[in-house]
Length: 216
Image (cartoon, rainbow, N blue to C red; front, side, top):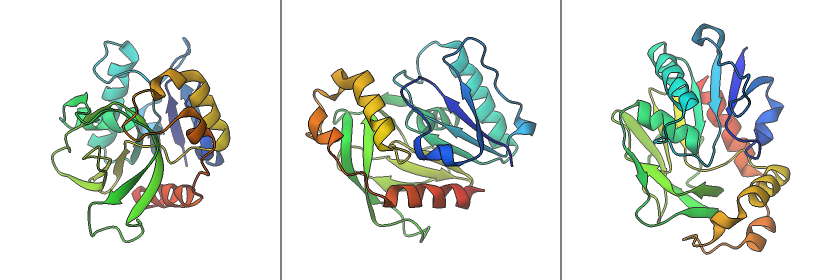
């Protein structure tokens, strides 16, 4: 199986996804090369501080790759920026979340009676200020008090997550150290200390792997 992970910045790493036998394409390096659709069995797209709406060449290339993956009915998992890229390709508008930015750990609630392997509630790491309208034809999986569209599934083989379930203690430290200024003004009431001291739920890894298994 050929799994590719697209990484946008050095401090948002695959985390628990490193257990997969995946090829990591680092788009922040000048010599990156996106794979051909024919060579991909599963595409995973990580997060990043940039916006889908930014004029960046590799963002356009990513969107074209996502578009082709969907055309050929191949599985995709998008995390944070990755989810927003998928939503954008599917025709959704990406915009600033009206209730503010979510940073740190917070609860989400299941928004569908389908997909029995998904729990009713999860406590996950958030690190985003933008969100999107639910793509046409997609099913909303999770929502929260502060953000209506937290997760969706499209065509039963494309999943977008606004939040980070791939987080480990190491990757959490990396993102806090690189982007600590972003925590200020968080609507969840988190602080740098509360985020760093949080006991990451082991359930998150289990559920993320079940999601991947499902779309495969």
